[in-house]
Image (cartoon, rainbow, N blue to C red; front, side, top):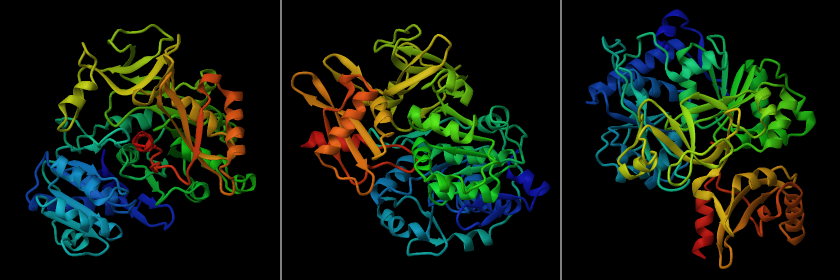
Length: 512
């Protein structure tokens, strides 16, 4: 299914509800507007296989752009709204996007981008216009709303977050299908058969829609005829308020959001009726085990988890009950066969820590314009074994555990130390808001453990606080994992998606 079907059968049903404003987009509106934009793009010369770039905040019309591309055989490139002009323009030029859509709210940066994207001539702006853009609303108002006889299914070309380098586009071959063939996509099938969602489900998305999970899962909800509730910006109490207001049944969060919600005063947490919530699923970053345990105690056994990547190499999933029996795991595979390999590509037995690969029938993606990075994502001998660069191990029962990203493994005195484990411990200290752990050069041991911490308001970053945090680490970690140095910052560069720009922080220290 796709919104066109629900535009006919349930035209007045909300397809989208905005969290703070309460603005509603019905299925009839979503279908008509995406039809008109699809027609407009074709009139401006775009064809199947072309790229459409969207640079916008969480906006009620975000999904009509997505569905216009998806019903036209085009790729949608969602541009990180927090990027500066040259960074954002890189995604447009690198992808070769032929249409660029933005909003008046983003107009300052969008205007600055124009000098970097001279070849992208279709430029539309929502909610008003500035020089270099035409009115989005006016343009689609005069476009035909007639449905094309053929509607080839498009896809997303999303970019990696660039936490360890420049963002890379993740591109898959377009499926040989039409959008209205009645077949569900991979995510919509997952939502139905793994999460128990249906057309009555109300899904809360608190993350930026440019992020892969946010946009893909939300469009998956539209494929099954459910309602997507979108927070304009994450706020812990606002999340609870919207769950109660809209009787939300399902939600997806990242671990930092869970930590923020757990930090709310008890009287705030008990103020809202969360009984409609059937499932909360989290992903995107390592979850501190104690935070996971506390969320299950608060909400009940409805906190599930999955591990996957924008690349689509594979996927694991586990329920609360499975996590309690296998604490720290990210689940068993539901897509792809996991393999753990050493640096030479030799497969390790259960319990052995190495690079996580997923086996698929065939390689299913490439990094756009970067054959070397594509090659690095493949197993040395098996092209259909693919990796995201994560380190982990499988237990005897086949549950996967992640220890860290390969790029951030600290090797000190010949011993591998995984920063994610240290971060998960320190983040649970009541004075800590956020933390980044990485290795820095040491003349004797090769590297030492360095931590940069964001403290709660009013807590002094003095030596006494350093000792409190180090003592707390000693109580929860082996001695060689305790940070030798702890520095403090007002804020760490973490995106709303939960991804931490750790490489940026480490590079600053290396530059000194």
